[in-house]
Length: 351
Ligand code: SF4
Image (cartoon, rainbow, N blue to C red; front, side, top):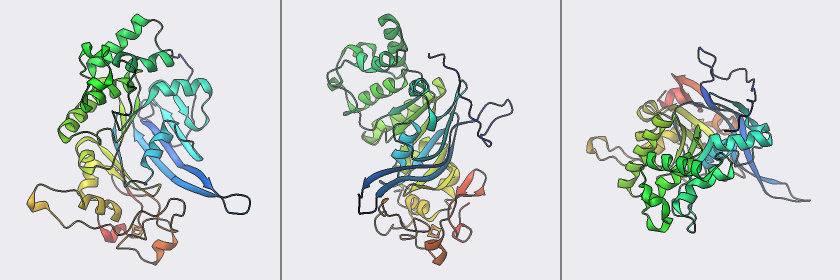
């Protein structure tokens, strides 16, 4: 443990409970991540607007889902929260029961401490693990790099504890990753991500590369570890049936912006944004009585280097009117903890 003094963040509207403890582990305001991708002396500079003005609160202890098509910016947003993507503008605060950090202005020591508190579980358990290291060394590496343990015995003890929590056989610690199946490798990845005792974990498509039967096993493991270790997850996925099963709140991204945010049950029963409605209608159902016609999303997601004016979804939205191409709708409350960014949400339904 670093023993580092907390940085006080004085956000006026940071959510706090009755005891004054912040309830929100991540709070972002107007967060943008833009990557320069060209232009020069005589041509206009181009920027890829991967994340473009996002406001988001992630409650402590939640299993928070983030969904959207490929290219919507969800991975970049998750990485910005980990300080692994450069933040162009905006505010991001992190709060847990020990520290509060302004993530945009972290000092060197604070960043080192934050790396321990916020971790990433990778998508691909085959690519994420070094084939030349034993499982013990893979899991132990973050402890050694961040100088969290002070002796080999202490490191081994911590590794054994997290390995057994992740339901790994302790005999496996001496083996190399190639000896394991996809599900076992993902358990190793999870053990590595959790060995430093983080509070906030970004799981980016963490079950996407696994067979369906193994997915359920890993999801159950993530859920039990959440209860056991007091974790907050940001669970990034394109698979809405997985998100419906495991998360308690979902935010929907489209072209770098949040278009809807709601408790999972609410979002799946009464989606308010036409984009969310189209995504949900495409989920295959095994129940013949609930098989509706999928709303086909016409065209491709526009380029984030040249996003359309007004509502970014207007080029594909069946409900678009003149105002939609002129004015960008903001996220507005439409129900309890339910927000939608659409000029016509009242007529379209949901909320
Ligand atoms: Fe569709 Fe207009 Fe709503 Fe955008 S604002 S989602 S274009 S109806």
